[in-house]
Amino acid sequence: MKLTAEQLRSFDEEGYVFFPNCFSEEEVALLRTEGEAILQQDRQEVWREKTGAPRTAFAAHTFNEVFRLMAHHPRLVEPLRQYFGEEVYVHQFKLNAKAAFEGDVWQWHQDYGTWARDDGMPEPRAMNIAIFLDEVYPINGPLMLIPKTHKQGVFAAGHDKLTTSYPLWTLDKETVTRLAEEAAPKGGVGIVAPTGKPGSVLMFHGNLVHASPPNITPYPRKIVYLTLCAVSNHITKFTRPEWIAHRDFTPIVPVADDALLAYARAHRIAAE
Ligand code: SIN
Ligand code: MN
Image (cartoon, rainbow, N blue to C red; front, top):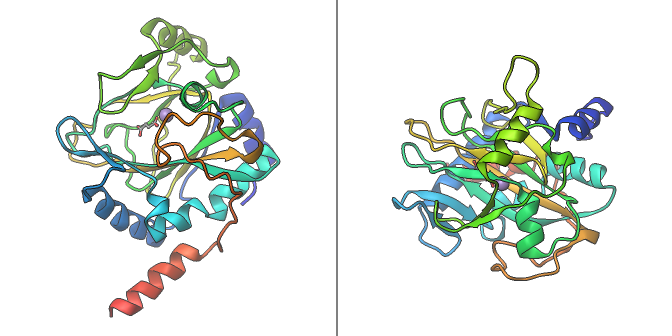
């Protein structure tokens, strides 16, 4: 999959690009089943909300074959190789549960703020790719973005270790208010929340300001975040565990485009 000239232009201008229905229902069903099983596991990579509900499973691509295939999937890897003009490696892999009724807030932040401060990543030449495993509605804790904020570098941030179970470098209310005002079209608001069917994909710039509200609905909102980094831009500081900020900078060799389907079909036949 290649980004079109229009998608590249829109990405440069807005800081994100959205691909509805990038993965089929059969592919997503496999990912969802495996993801739900991982979130139940008791292991160091699975972090919980303060209530005990699952929040994030890190590094599932290192211990689960289906997520290994996803992290090496050409529909995700090729657009980033194209954009960065070089090979990429996996910097981080998160499955965020945003559980029904209990999924907690993600405060306003920039991902590159954390990658630079905590991991010594030289440049914002890394990007998050969000893959929706459940339908994302306006009401179940969607990811909210402030368009165009990727053009202003890294903002001052405070290290919030208290609000949720996951420490994050977060922006203050004044900065978010100013940025939303700047991004607002005439008569509108300056925050967008892309919604869509399971299998939709959202790529967003490492400096794009984003957040998500708690999920108080009965509808879970699982999203996988695959963070790919240009190989020449690999991290230089190892302050976080290896399974949060990876230290294997080997370029990704993509799998076949039908790898998830082949896996699903082979395992269905084996189970029959
Ligand atoms: C993130 O910003 O890394 C996660 C946000 C979310 O899952 O809502
Ligand atoms: Mn983030």
